[in-house]
Length: 240
Length: 248
Image (cartoon, rainbow over all chains, first blue to last red; front, side, top):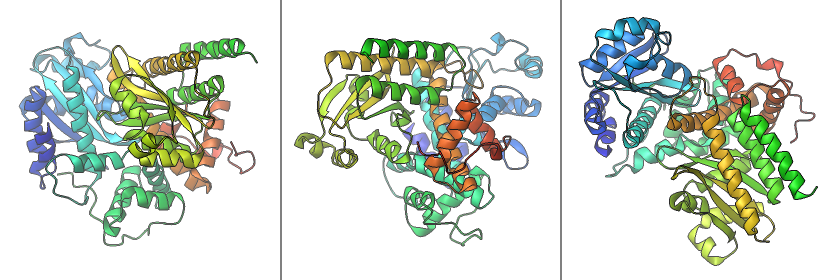
């Protein structure tokens, strides 16, 4: 899994796609896909490891129902160890359409932070049955790394052989004061929560300070971000 | 009030909450307060491990940011980490002892700054797995008795049950989903504190106090109301937030 996470830090559009292929192998599932919520066009498939994952993602997001859309909407993981065993009234259109698909089990993990909903990581298998707890833990770690990648454009990249970097930045994103500052900035600058978090990170990056430090200043009202971009900020998250 | 009477009151209160549709963060916060009163300690926090095995604060007997941040320092040092890793309670730890201040300098210094002199950590147990810790702090060095520790463990077990019992929006089928949902709810609450503090030009602590008072008075769940606020589907002007009476 460490290898998969390292691929995620690769620059360029290939990073996430390679992580999906390697991630499917590491998790022991048949397919893995990432779909992200776009500001104006809804949920879009961004990367997938194979055709089975792609077909299933396309189907559920076209129909607007299924474990993936539920995961994005509620910010909670949704597991379907046997698609054939789902009550037909849960996702009626999907039940009609999915009969001919090779996919038999689907596991969806939210990508996001609190009320910030970024997208969903979906693992599919051709055989029914639950995920082991090790597989579930690995998938959660991958979803967390994807969250950091999607919300962390412009993060200083340090050379570190193990996973300290991703772990440190993931930890910083969990501080209460960072969430509080994100909420405050969203009101101050009339931004959505994800945009507010990107501004916060951009400012931290530009000023060479930690996001926690900057957040404390904002919550204490000693610092207010300029509504006009100060030029040091990275572009809004690359969606690949 | 004698402790037996106190205990039976708390028991009835807990049973009432758990059969109802309850808000897990609010429930755990009130459980922390009851635990603090029953054991006569100064502060109580409930921490849950995330998928990296890092302890996150879910609730505390006092929601003020300073105390929440102090509890959060226990993610990498202090008896809660040991308790979480070993699954064993760590009780009656003297925060002024040199071994403690040497091993956990940041934690011990901050604890002493607040006035804490002793601490205890009890595991949140789930069928042989440890999912978090109950953290107790004392300003009085008198050790907890064996009965006190048993009672604290019972409170920790109730916290675990509550986390697994919560009704989530999507009725997550898995225990892991329940744990993750509880952690997510906590983050949404912090984001809402920031939104309200800025809208109302209050401190985050005062904004949260007004928010929680409104939710309790109207029988609304904190997590659900917080999500409605972040989605923009709830008009926050409906919440009274004048400065008078916001002190907790």
